[in-house]
Every structure is written in structure tokens, then in C-alpha cells.
Amino acid sequence: MMEEGTTGMLIDAHNHPNWHGFNAQKILENMDEQGIDQMWLLSWEVPEDEYSPSYHSVLPPNGSGIPLEDVLAVGREAPDRFVLGYMPHPKRPDAIDRLKAAVEIHGIRLGGELKVRLPFDDPDALRLYQFCGEQKLAITIHLDYPIDHGHGNYPRPNWWYGGNIESLERAIVACPQTVFIGHAPGFWAHISGDDKFDKEVYPDGPVLPGGKVPEMMRKYPNLWVDLSAGSALKALSRDAEHGGKFLVEFQDKVLFGRDYFDTRLMDFLTSLELPEEAFAKITHLNAQRLLSDYLGEA
Image 1 (tube, rainbow, N blue to C red):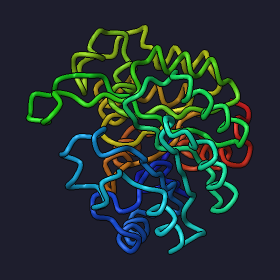
Image 2 (image 1 turned 45 degrees about the vertical axis):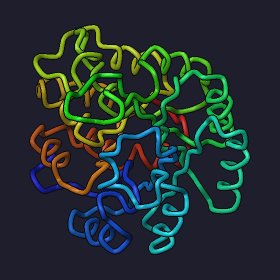
Image 3 (image 1 turned 30 degrees about the horizontal axis):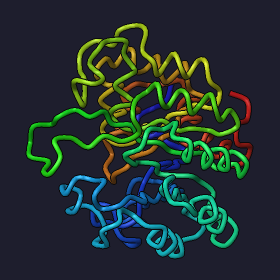
């Protein structure tokens, strides 16, 4: 078992530049404080009318999410510590050309974050995913259901992304050579076989058998997950015993990631006392393997 405070190498496989006010200097200081050796920096290319105005307080002041330019600028500050990711909006007619240029000119190694108001299996999106598979770019996806939050997200009552778990599954089947990394509340709600996924943003209570996420993780070698943001942590900690078993069962396809800059995830993982091999895979070995060998042996 891992002893408290023992982390070895650590890779944060989900974060963003200039996110929550963290510029390059603050990110690097944060990484040093928490012993993070490497970080995956992801863009979020999205029109301003596709995200809640509440994001304005945590996004760069450019009105277009987190653009590739921010990824590149922060990445240049410490090239050995950042792995760069980019995903153009699939509805851009030049999306594939833009991603191809980013790979060839800027050394982009990841596709993400894909967080747009478009079903995952949209035909234009599928073409982009297939290109990602050819280029060996794993795609970090964000799934949110259209749940009315009830706290003033004007001008829309909800902000959905990706459609539903079924549209994600169709994309996974249609693009078997493309690795999809599952993330966000709508995705993690499916850890359980209950019916809360489209009614509660962060379901709680015991995890019931029959969840789509574990079912799909067993069925599709090209579906991975990262543990970033509050969504994964809430899903795993709503039933901590089940959460530990989930991480052990899927230890070959789970990535440590924060999507923020705190220690909550590491604190939780340490409390689980996972087997040393599983902990090492989750905290860095899987991330290294995904970049070096892509699909590898799951």
C-alpha cells in the first residue's frame, strides 16, 4: 500500500493555462508546491455564446474560452514540464487543417478539451476524431446533461455539452483507433446504475450496479478516464469503498488530473491506500504510456 505523503512522479493530465487566474508563473509555483513534475495543458475552443457567463470570472478575458495561443504561450515558459493539447471546434470547416497545423508547427500531442454544445457523434465531429486517431492524439471529452441548475445561469437555464452517454458510445465505436478520455459531471454520473444522471449534476448516495461508465470501460479499450475536477472526486467519494475498487479494476486506463490547482484529489487518493502499482499507474505511468505507445496494452 502507498504510505501517506508518498507520491513518486506525478503528472497532472488535465489542466488549462490562465484558468482561474493561474498564469505560467503561478502554475509553475503550484506544480512545485504539490510535487507535480508535468502538466497537460488543454485548450477549450468555444464560441462565447456556448458557455455560461459565469465562466467569465475564471477564463482569460478574450471571449473565446481558452485558445491555442494561451496554451502555446504558457507552454513556452517551461517546455520540459508541459504537454500541449488543442481541439478546434468540430463545426469549423477548417478544423482538421487547424489541428494538423498545430501538430506539425507547434508539437501538439493531445486533443482536448472537447467541450461544445454538439452531440459527440455529429458527422463533422467523427471526422475530426478519426484524424485524431491517425495522429495518435487522445481526446479529453466533457459531458454535461441539460439539467436546470436553478441558480441564474442566464440567458439559458442549462449548459449542456456533448449530448449524452449514448452519443459518446457511438463515437467510441465509430473511432476504435482513437482514445477518448472521459471527464465532467455528465460522464461521471454514469459510474452508478441509478437514474440520477440527467436529474442531478453531482449525484450522491451508494453506487448501484449497472453504471454505463464501468460497463463501457470494460467493453472498449479506447475509453479512458481522468480524475479531474470535482466531478470525478464526487463520483468516487460518494461511495469510497466502491471508488477504490473502481480505481483498482481500471488502473490501466485512469489518469490523475486536477482541472484546478488544489490538493483534494491527491488527498483522497492517499486516503484510499491503493496498491502501490495501481497508484503509480494512475499518477504517472498511464500518462506516459498513453503518450508514448497510444493504445498500449490495457
